[in-house]
Length: 241
Image (cartoon, rainbow, N blue to C red; front, side, top):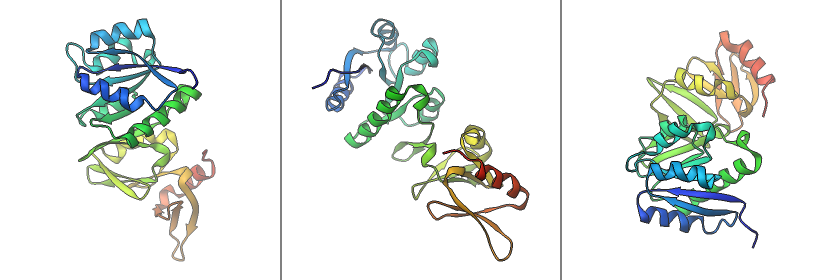
């Protein structure tokens, strides 16, 4: 068995939760737990003394919570952070704090394995390999959707509907707000109510009545408005994978 490559710090005020992370992490031999913390103050000390590569961080802890830990340390000086919590209402704040992932308790083995795959890539290739994602709160907990898995986003009144792998997720953000988040990452407006991932456009097709359609790799056909045709077509031609 090869020696572990990366050090892990686990921070949770519940012993059962820390034990759960140890059990879930056991099959991943490249990762070794080097410390456990019960509150935010212990985390701040351990970050300096142990210098972990990964931090599994609970949000609601005594004295200093998870977000305060990141604020005091600053995001750029943190290791790869995976939030571990029983509450989904902090998902958006976790995304803004540049967390690598957001796990809801109890965590399934499949969900944990997905997180470890993402962590391994990040640690192997460096911070630039971090998957940019949208974190979408749902009735069953937060869902992390990497931007490269989003097909398109449509306006839904004051909300937005994100389409990914044949499923849709409703977000409590306007399309304008989401465009500010992802517009620089390969997305462009096809019309007033549609934001499309450019690398997912298979072809631009003109219909017999002169309408331009963006045909996506998943088969969706998104109309392109007249005033956006030139800009959108140029963006598709110049897209990067």
